[in-house]
Amino acid sequence: MTADEIRGTAQGTAPTPLSVLDLVTVGAGHTATDALRTSVRLSRLAESRGFHRYWVAEHHSMPGVASSSPAVILAHLAAHTTRIRLGSGGVMLPNHAPLVIAEQFGTLEALAPGRIDLGLGRAPGTDGATAAALRRTDRLNEGADDFPDQLAELVRFLDDDLPDGHPHRRIHAVPGPIQATSPGGVQSPHRPPVWLLGSSGFSARLAAALGLPFAFAHHFSAQHTIPALDLYRESFQPSAHLDEPYAVIGVSALATDDEKEARRQVMAGALNMVRLRTGRPGLVPTPEEAEAYAFSAMEREFIASWNSNIVHGTADEVRSGLDDLQKRTGADELMLTSHAHDGALRVRSYELIADAYGLPTAA
Image (spheres, rainbow, N blue to C red):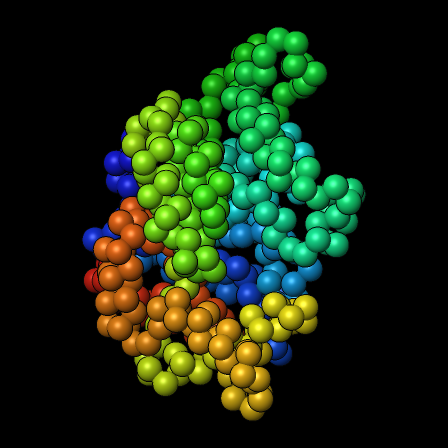
């Protein structure tokens, strides 16, 4: 696959492809059902307005994030869309056996041929105690340390090419290539492309060595964005998967009809992060709750830094901020994630951004 092929399937007219990262956030006074309905609405909007891909991210034990099972959510979204690429941003590989992921994403590929991306991360997507419960072990560093080996095994399951002598040589991920070698079998023309996700140099270096596309979490690790992207590009080795580097960055972006409302929503999101960072995760608070909250001096220092990396304001202000960020980082694609208490406001944000870029409305 070439970088142009990755980029070329985008439907929109923005200078850089725009995509969506959905955390399926749950606001106070709302349910997970409400959040998932918003995701369906948002995925259909993204498809109709020419956004390139739509990813969901694995998180656990967070009341305000209903995306603990990306494969289930992606199957649901596949049933409500027809063209947009769908994927994980990402599945946390150390939490799962590689065979399980290969089976899940082989199934997704069978449901939505040619539309599935498999983005993988090595973080747990939660706290240490929850990670231990997920993995049924307290040896949490083992999962991160073994990530390259886990990744290699997963890719071999996807390609059904485990070598002779491998303990799993006679095991096959189904749906998968093994079906083509059975009597009457027909080879599927697609296999989910693998992406590596990261917030530091480790995954950037590994993605480069393996010749894989790379997605960087700028939205919560902005200080490391440019060093990681430079490392990825400088170290990149062309592969059968990709001929040149291709880098996506996740960006927090929120556009509203009124600049003041954008600031209110961003402060509510900041309060949510303060609670998460201090071990009190909860539902996304309302702007009114954030306005009434007495932030300490230390909390205000934290949110000033946090909010400085959120592109927010009117649609024109957001477009200007996104364009500037793309120029500074050289990102090949911008994956936008929005944080607001109300799902309708999140949907409106993507509408405004699409309008600001002149993305067409599909007939």
